[in-house]
Length: 286
Image (cartoon, rainbow, N blue to C red):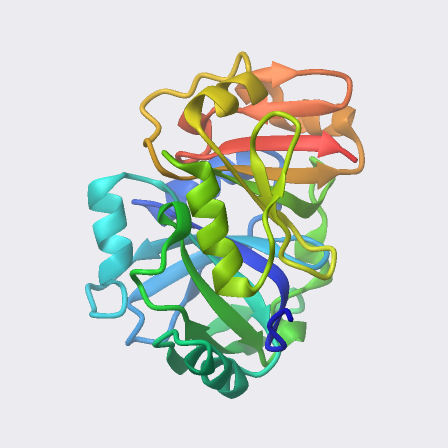
């Protein structure tokens, strides 16, 4: 029985040292990046979002050291920039906490917070959220996971922000490096009541539900076979490394990415981690 309080992958968090530089980089890759939003003071963070049709990417930077952002600061110190955590879409944060506790996980939350939003017509609004968090030690493949209940979706999925020059529409998958991919996939499966599925190249897929993006667990050799020609640099031995997005038009994506592309084919464009804050970015037609 799958969890009743989550309905699939909601967004992926990329920790960056400098938010302005992160926004510049992703804008140069053909994305429409939202204006910076300051989170509630207890969070001590700010963000830029890259909104897609039903999910999104979030660039987060630390603006003031607080207890709540300690894991993010530790991530930046240990690994540098990259994918630090992922969120599922939550339907009821209170129910989610109760559900996790009933399954033997010491869930954290619910937490209420928000951020100011500048609307396209010049008005001010607030995006409000309730989140609940799996225990920090439950990090399959080194990835923290939580769930996010959107209380003001209209102030997050702003139509103007979902249109991108590279024609990106949705998260297809997040690829996770692991020393033991089977164990990491099984760990994720236990957290969200999903059974890992072996893939033809030896990787394992964990679906998140509702047609949202999947997690794919693999070792470094498999990752290298999947992304020939992409300079991997000093990527970690373990952790989320690839964000694969579906685009409507790969040619438009190639034009938008331009010289920052590491690999271009008729149906796919790939960007190396050095150009995308520690992330292998794949833009591919379905």
